[in-house]
Length: 508
Image (cartoon, rainbow, N blue to C red; front, side):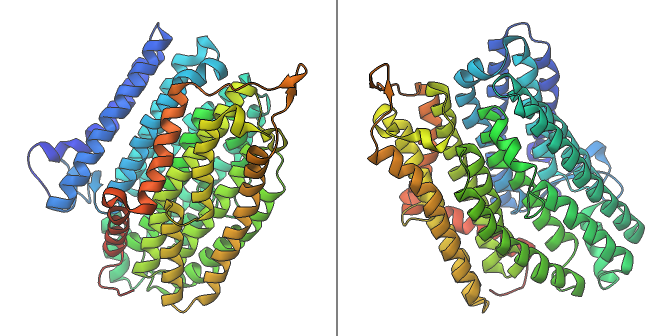
């Protein structure tokens, strides 16, 4: 519904602020000032996203028509139960990663490029926030490209540390452009079918047409492939390992926590609020494509993670496997399963963010990324390794961690829908996660530190600005899993509310 007053204009502020400040940040003379601007913009966006979420709880859906042009003729920004938590996630992870970035960029980014680096980061954040908040299908594509183009630049800036970042950025550029092309072609077909770009209006017209003609079916196929590339759906994930492994640590953490999550949000938005799982062609894609590829991704990406010798690539393949969990929940298409998939989306951002922060700190102090070099790290970097331990156990799904909560929710939803075989796949994938995380923990905690100049490596802990964000995420994981201060119940209720919003009137 339309709301008057302050809340009516706040959604636009969430996008306009980082866009404007990105331009200013790029020309700032002092590099330290560039970080300060990026950090405070992220804090303001986090507070704004929280305020919008609280307003949504109290007053329902907020729709802001840009320029005063009401939808469907104008472009609208929408805050609802599905978009509000993802907005908070993106802004919050921007703040967390920027605290970590202050010392990390000193080691990874050339001084003359740091202002441009933070400007590109703000553009990326603005694009991701815009993707989530817009109610216009073509503007989804525009913001998707804003975030993607800035991400290609951010990944390439890792070349100061590892020249392979350039080839990773190029690979990401090619596959990302293909994904965007597929997506915009799908939007074009949808426009042909419905004559509108407003997503709510598209849904209404498709419902009147009982799902639409062959044109709508083709549109749906193109959109699924395009978003599948963006969210790293197996086997369209080949860009992700290189992008995560060779980009600056701060960028890897932010991307792993937000970029694929925003694309997954769009998948849920289009599948359930533009189209409808009751359409025959949508049901077929959900059952045989999303569920099928999600399950294959859970197993084969986990197997690939086991055989990786680089910890960053191991975690990257792990992310592909975790995307499979979310696709499984979306594909089963019940309120319980979609809620569980949405919950895992939120939890995995916290878990994987903590893991990448810890691995980045290990490189910062000792220049190590290979798994064989983790021996004795519990003695040389005890606090960093402790954060890795907590986040790693959460990724596996050990009780009293965030990962356990979302995996149990997903297993219960699968069982309730009659897909008992999916419960076995979830357990198997978790066992495989135990293998690739466990081998690092065994080396770190049960091996001696390496010998350097005839003596064991001395303790050299990460700086406080790196430890604070990784432990914040680790503690959040425990708090969610143990329901400290009701945080676990809050996230479960939030996810169920989002699922009920996109699947109204449906039972579990």
